[in-house]
Length: 227
Image (spheres, rainbow, N blue to C red):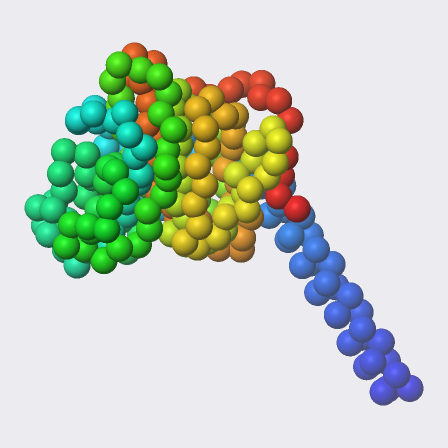
């Protein structure tokens, strides 16, 4: 009888543990649903290794861009070296544990003295007399989202770490480490972290400076989540 009672108590303890885990999971999910979306600012908590989205640079593109352009991402050993190698359309920054140089230019095999990470494009620019570039660095926690929004030019997203879904009205695009996505001008979208860890990424928007680079939507249409 003592052995049977002990076995019953063990099963009750296991059932209680499972119930607690389920309650914790539900609470975590509920908190994630209530969290406000992460918006980009010029000096966000991302600069301190916390959740946020930072606008690293926002300035006019220099030169003629009648030909297709690409986004080149290179890694450097020091911020000084990256800054020295950056041209008019390059942004040097320290983020996500490394130093980077991100350049908008034609397709090229030159990497400005750094280690080539990725080139993404060609990027189709909206019709405008001039263009500006906005480069962002973001860190989102599990369950974190961006606002549903649109850009007045094409946006490129490159994932450095973690996993996310880019939700659009037509499809959900799952992105992992080293993967990128180009969103055409005016595409309604929302980023959502789908992995169990943080998602670190860079973003580039090429836009007409006569219009806002980004606009949040209070009542977006239904967006497709990743399966």
